[in-house]
Image 1: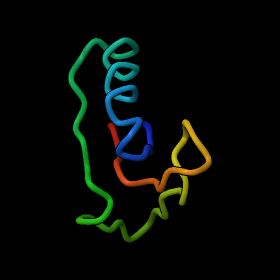
Image 2 (image 1 turned 120 degrees about the vertical axis):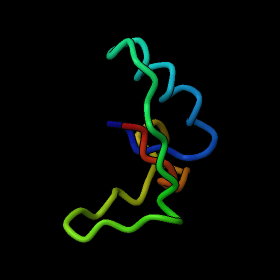
Image 3 (image 1 turned 180 degrees about the horizontal axis):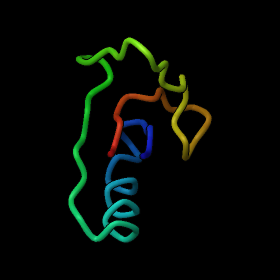
Length: 56
């Protein structure tokens, strides 16, 4: 699972495919809210990017 900004979305998809050898689901965190989980506020790959996409 990766939580990334728009700029690092492609990188997270590549990492997911390399690790799991399957296509990920991509969830826009602006459109979906989780009751029992708060996503990080910043991208896993940079400090400046807003955590926007969940790659699972």
